[in-house]
Every structure is written in structure tokens, then in C-alpha cells.
Image (cartoon, rainbow over all chains, first blue to last red; front, side, top):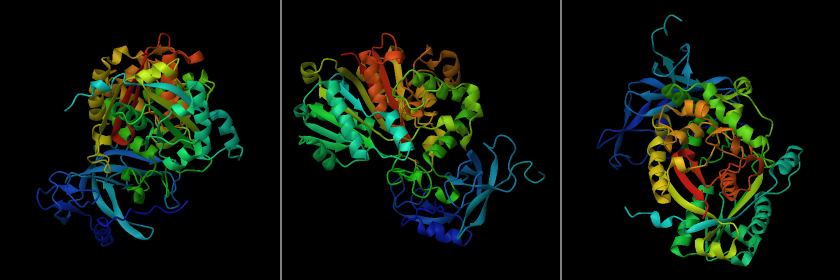
Length: 136
Length: 389
């Protein structure tokens, strides 16, 4: 086994460079304003190759979630969660939910971006932002 | 768009062959390595030639599976051919039909061998297989999200929630397929299980249990496809390929958009129109259904996608209508990937052929005339309808 490593294409490097400074930035199409994720050379909607790295609100909601009970990476001992988050800006990110967990169903729960240190890198994670997240 | 109807019935499956999956699995688990991928493929090739009762000289086309090289396989089998290619099981059948239609060749050998168990191929983790073809298999690793099982678990969680399907309803897939495997001497897992066994089995990636996952084993499969007229001349028992169809969802694939918001339904609906129209048949004409089942979830997705039931009804279809040899529409009558063998769609073609030939022994579907095959691997929906000629 080994640690989990990011895919680092040419277009991923600025994403991780911003992440290292604690910012989540996505490419926003210079022609139609569509956000791209994963980072890409071209807009799948209008085929424009122009874009600007743009900060996102960090607000989103959980589309789905899983709990890993089997170990695949040295740096991820089970059990741990992974969530699919629909960002307010449109893209879906796969990330981890940190802190207080909703009881029962997580789908549709609002979440807020945070940043965490994982092994040698900073990367995005989310915290529950729904009713009950404060008091639990 | 040009009609594809002239592909119907132009080709037939004239021979199928495979390795002894349970025997090889037992040897691999004991630390032995019976063959590499090429050796398994070669053993299956000999079995397919014997099954078809044709001469190797009749073969003039070669398609190899994803895990072996075309030239080396052709060299090993002593095949110089007019046409060649490389593809997964379902694409290989579609390409063989198209090549026959184009006149590139008349008799195509579709050759697959995989030593994935003895070679310890990893489907998750740092060396996850398939990432070069499907970025979603590796892209989310920094968050610990890895393995094709996890992709289907993420999909299953939302699908069950949106459709109001219960865990026990999904569990019917594993239970029904294990019943089929219990009647199949070629199956690795023949001990029947109950819904209680399923619910009590451990989670791998929750909400999916151990029994929702395919097996991992070594083996080989060879399919022989011939032009219909040639098939009538050289084969005693051709099985006609009556319809084929394909539609690929690529948009948003890595961010899981089509998995989590469409469940591949749109692709399967389009392919349903193609394949049933080409065959001049509908879901009600199908006597059995073979579904690529790397995970149990594929089954309800296909039942809804191909119109066997409406979206939202798959849970009830599984439990009330039934998908077993004993009740309802028989699905994955060999046990499929969950219980027979994980030959990545290749074993399903064999089972379809055997059912239409009435050669399936204790698991034979009575009066089986038409068998529908479906796969939706990574949103690439592919379908084939087999039938008596």
C-alpha cells in the first residue's frame, strides 16, 4: 500500500497551488462563465479555451456519501467518509465531511468549505452547515 | 441518422469456450499460478474451437480483450487474419458484427484472458487499474475516494434515496444470482444465501456490502462470431445476433454528474430504442436478461433503463415480480460476476448463447428464445440481443 496522491495534469497544478494557500479556485470560462472541474483545457459547453481561476463561495449541498470500511491507502485508515458536494457554482466535488456529522440521511444537507492539512498537502474538506450542526 | 437495422441477423455466435474457473481459482488460492492471461486465453480458444466444431483455418478476424496484446495473441494462436482489433467484451461483439457487415472478415475470434487474481491486480488504492481510461477511477484519491466499488456505492446511496428503494430490495440481486450459481457447475460461489445473510454481511464501501461486489478470479473466454450465411454452412447451432446498440455518456463523467443525477438512465433508454427496434422485439419478448454486474446496482439500473419497469419501480420488480430462475424474469442465470466468474462481461455472452441453445442444464430457462445483454460500465451503455436464428 501507499499514500493517496493527486492526479497532476498540466491544468491541475494551479488548482493545487491555490489549495496550498488555503484557497479553492476553479476555472471559470472566459466566454460563457461555466465553471470547470476537474481543471481542463477547454470548456465542454462552448469550447472556449480561455478561462480565469476564480474563487468559489464554498457553499454547497451533499448529493451523496459513502463510508469506507476497507483500507485502500496508508493515509486513510477506515472507517472514513467521502461526500459528493454540489457547489453553488455548479460543479460536483468529491471531498470529506469533517467535524459534526448529520444523523441519518446526509443527502441535501448544506455544507461549507474548509481547508485541512492532510499528510504533506492542504486540501479541501467540508463542514456541515445545517440546523443542528452548531448544537450537536 | 442512418438506420442500423441492416445489422440485425447478419452475424451469429457459432462457438463459445472458457477455462475451468472453479479449478483454476482453487489453484490460485492455494498459491499456484496455472496460466498468465495469454495461457487462459489459449485454453479458452481450444475449448471454443471444439464447441464450434470448426477449423482454425476458418477464422479470418481477431479481436483481443483489453488485457492482452493483439499481435502476441495472434502469434501464439497461429492466426494470420484479414482484420483485427482490441476491445472489451461487449464492444468486441459490436465491432465483430460491424466488421462482418463491412466485409472485412467472415469469422472472428474474440479472445479474452485475465490473470487478475494471481497477478494481484488492484481495483482501488494507489495503483488502481483503469485510471488511464476512466479518470474518475483515480482523480478523487486525495480524499480517500477510490475503487470502482466506491463509485457505485456513491451512486447507490443517492439512487436508493431518490427511488425509495430499500437495502433489502437491492439485496435481492445477490440472493437471486447466488441461487442461479447454485445450479451452475461453472460457478465459483454455489452456496445459496438469504436476504438475512446479505444484510448481515460486512460493508466494503457503505452502503454496498460484500455480496454487492463482483468476484476477482483468473480465467479466459473465447467467442466465435461468423457471418450469418457462413454460420449456417459451418455451424450446427448458431445463435443469431439480432440487435446491437450503444450510447456513451461522457459529459461530467469525472465529477460523477451522470452517475449521481441520471443513473445512466438516459443512455440506456436510447440504447433500448436502438436495440429493440433493430431486433423487432421488445422487453416482453425477452426470456432472460444478462446484465454486466461488477456491482449489484447495475441490475436495477438496467431494469429501469431498458423499460422492464418504470423508474422508481425496480425495488418492487426485484422483490415482487422477481429476477430469479424460480420467479419472474431470470437475470444473470449463470450467477454473473457476483457469483459465477468475473470475466468482465465475457461470461455473460457465453450464458446468453447457452440459454438460447437450450444447453444450460439445471439453470435452463424454459423455451428460451431471446436473451438480452446489457452493460453500463462507466456510463457507456451497450446492448446485444441474442436469439434463435
